[in-house]
Every structure is written in C-alpha cells, then in structure tokens.
Length: 251
Image (cartoon, rainbow, N blue to C red):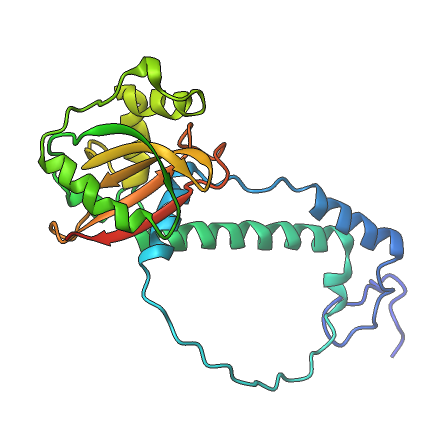
C-alpha cells in the first residue's frame, strides 16, 4: 500500500502523541505577569459584615490531621502546555475560587439574597445613643453590654450629651450615629436586613481608636444581642471592618 502524499501529517495533541517542546522561560514569565496583573477581588461591605458574624458565632470544629499518600502525578498532555490555554485556565480557576468563597459565606450566613436570620427580628423602637467616651477592648465589650442594655430599658434620651463638648477625635463617629440616614445604612449592612433598630449605641474608643459600639437584636428571640464595634465610616475605610463582633447573652 502506498501512502497518500496529500494526507494530513498532523499528530493529535492528546496522550500518546509526541511530547511538544516545554514552555520557554519567556512564556512562563508571560503567564506570571498575567496573573500578577489581575486586580484584587473586592468583597462588598455587607458581605464582610456577614463573614465576621459567621466566624464569630460558628461552633468550634475539631480537625484531625491525617496523612494521605498521593498517587504519582502523570505529566500533562501537550495541549495544556500552550501559553494561551494556560492563561485562560488560570483566569477561570481564579474566578471560580473567588465565586466559591463568596457564595459559601453568603449561603452560610443567610439565604444568598442579602438577608440573614436578623431579617426575622422586628424593627422595634430605636434604643438610646450615648457618647460616654469610654475605652473599650475585646475583653471589656461583652462586660459593658449589660450596662448599655440597662440604659436602654431606663428610657435614656436617644442622644445624650452636648455635641459642643464631644472630644474632637470622637466628632466623626458621633456624627455617624447621630445622622439618622447614615446610622440606619450602617445598621442595615451589619444586620444584613433593612429596618433593624439598635438596642443601644455608645460612642467611645476601641483599642485607642474612635469607635461606636452598636448593639443590635438577633434571631435568638431575646436571649442574646449582637455587639458590633465600628469606626467613623462604618465601612472598609475603617481597617479592619468591623473592628469587632461579639454575640452577648442578655443578663
């Protein structure tokens, strides 16, 4: 039998074909530059708040380390050594990972539609807002919350203190909690639902930084409250955001 001279001499790129030439150093550098140029993913502030809540209230888990023997890896076929395919695959993997992380946290903290268990909390009447200038830490916030709740039940005026005597470094955070629209926008993203009203708010310092302790109801039916500590903007500009989240049992 004679060989047809017009027949294609192309060889399949899959397994079994001859191994193509590996990527050159320039090709590998191009892939690295492409990945390095990708922008950092921006997580919405309400998602950050829900992530903080989920981490704080999640029960501890026990992880047992196990040693697994992995099978010997088989070298990839020639088609995956093409620079364009490598670049496309890298982008797809990064996008998929980012999507999985965001979806996982949103699913864990709510129904994925921007609400959480806090959406079952009645709006109620807004609690008092005070400007004590108190110094808070992660250890003292849960100890101070019962006192803030006592003030709330004692019908303290919604805004206590004279704005003219507020310390200069507390002016910005005081303005945040005293402005109804900005205060509600902050609470909405912390609670993960619109219309939730504060149980109490106090302005002071957290670890030396101006901050507001915002106490909100949750889905516990009144047995506990959520204590949030935020900075003057109640956003990512107050690094980190939030400063603190703790679920505190009512006294």
